[in-house]
Image (cartoon, helix red, strand yellow):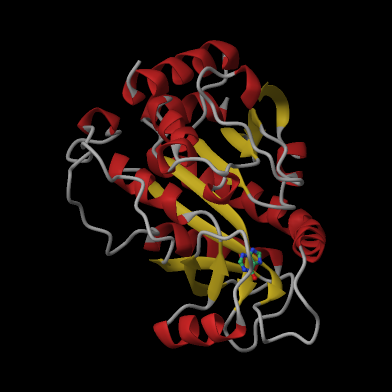
Length: 294
Ligand code: HPA
């Protein structure tokens, strides 16, 4: 079976499992940020292992299930746990779940991650909205034949497409407003993706800073690329879980990353509860909006 048909089958399975829930927003919850799933009301939980062709996460702290339900009153589908290239998955496997969310009809996604802070002044536990990214993974998930049928909007699904606003400026503005209401500032940053799994060397971090990166991590960028290929709008949120290599007196560990994520997840929950209705309003048809207001 070809890749497109596999994605269609996975999406068809999800559609059947979700029953009455018709998600408006997709979310990917990064390392240690899974608590958002616990805040979803009337949840329907689908383990990745049950979804046809879905890759299964092998990293601790990445649960591996889709939780669909209501956040801030909006029907959402959240991926609790993602798969990474460093686990041995191919670029197509890494981005399979995003393709499935697109095939489910989602046009707006929030991608969250744990990241190392490169910019001076970042504090552990801070949330940062991505304004742009730098792909240093050494690959692009769209290599290979183009598949225009993945498009979720007219004009999307092209072989070559614009990435000037990979992360929606308007969604960033919504997020900033929501953060201000919660009483914290939301800075913007540039996320640089490496393939991992080793953390960076201090020399790499110095080089990345010179390139304009303020955050470093091992995910998100492939998902953003396929989301933009499909014509979805993307909000990227990083949690600074540690200072990048060479900037902190202590060596980096996965535990540190995971625990820092856990410390901010309640803040992330509140932020997303505020953002969800505003994001939904941008992609809903009038009848969907009326249905949600009931
Ligand atoms: N480097 C790469 N990935 C990460 C880091 C880091 O410092 N922190 C969390 N994910």
